[in-house]
Image 1: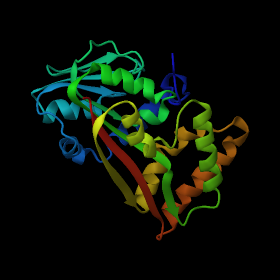
Image 2: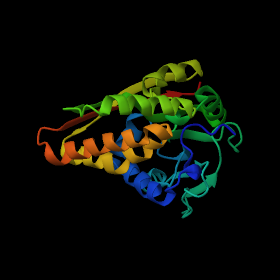
Image 3: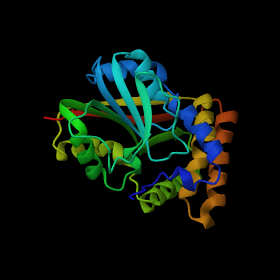
Image 4: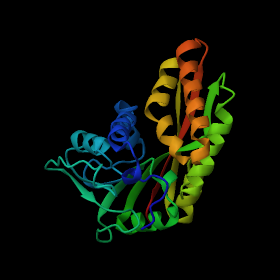
Length: 260
C-alpha cells in the first residue's frame, strides 16, 4: 500500500494526535459551506470526502445539505468516525483503490490529503473514475513555504527546512499547494477554479499552531535532530506568549475542477 507521509497508525501519541487533528479540522469551519458553494457544490447528489478522519467536515456537509448522500472514507480505521446518520456513512478505504463503481459521485472533497500522497496523479485518476461526468473535485491543501512568522525565531528556518525534507523522505510533498491546479489539468479536469485562503493573526494564532500542529511535525526529523526541533517549537511558543508584535501569516490553496 502507498502509505505516504501521514501514517496515523505509526504515531506514538495517537490519542493526543487525534484530539489535535479534530481541533485543526474545526478551524474556519463556519465558512466551509460557503467555500463549497463557491466551487459549485450540488445541493443534492452523492458526495465523497477523502481523508475524513473523525468526519467533522463530512458531518457539516450532511447537516447543511440534507438532500445529499455523503460518504467519508479514511485509510485509518482507528481514527475514522463511526457515527453514521441517514444521509452520512463512513467507510474504510484508500484513495489509491476506491471501492466504488465508476460514475458514482457528484462531488469529491479532500482537505490536507494531497500533501501526504506519493502519487497524486494515481489518486486523481481514481477520483476521476468514481466522479460522474460533470462532477467536481475540490481540494484544500497547504504549501509549507507559505508560512511566515514575524519576527521569526532564529531556530525556525532550519527546523522548517528539515520538516519539509523529512516529509519528502516519507513520501509526501510539503509544497503541493502550488501544484494542485497543474495536477488537476494533467489529470484531465477542466473548469479549474483557484483561490487562496489567508490564515493570519498574532500570539493566539501562533499558540494554536504550536499546540496543535508543530509537535506532530517533529516526527519528520531525524532522531538526532528531534531536540533541535523541540527547541524551535519552544521558541515559537515563547514568541506567541511574550512578544506583542508577533504576527503569523499562512496561505492555503483551494482548487477545484470538473470531470468532462
